Length: 112
Image 1: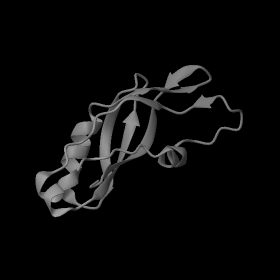
Image 2: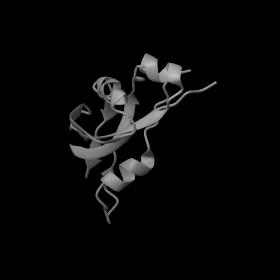
Image 3: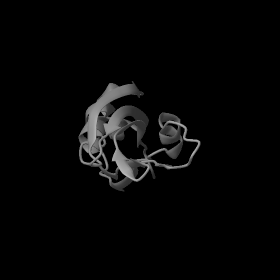
Image 4: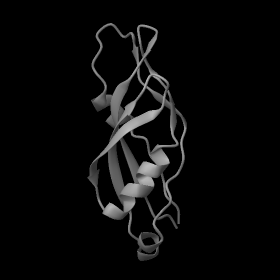
């Protein structure tokens, strides 16, 4: 059993502004860390997700995290702790690094 992280490209797409000229590049994760699956939930066979809205700054750091939704409050702190360690290739507009807000789902899944 382990925690599975999924960075949903769909979630990023909805968070990104539309660009008609195509000179926008979304942030790309270059380092991710798996969250610690809470022992009690893992033993109980409980899976879930935490949707975190955050700012990816112009250096690719994750900042200003806010939980949008969670299936179980016990998943929140491990998700936030893991996201603090993530690093992104920053978003770019017209060749310049720009900060952007995105929503990232952190999934906790029991696998056999």
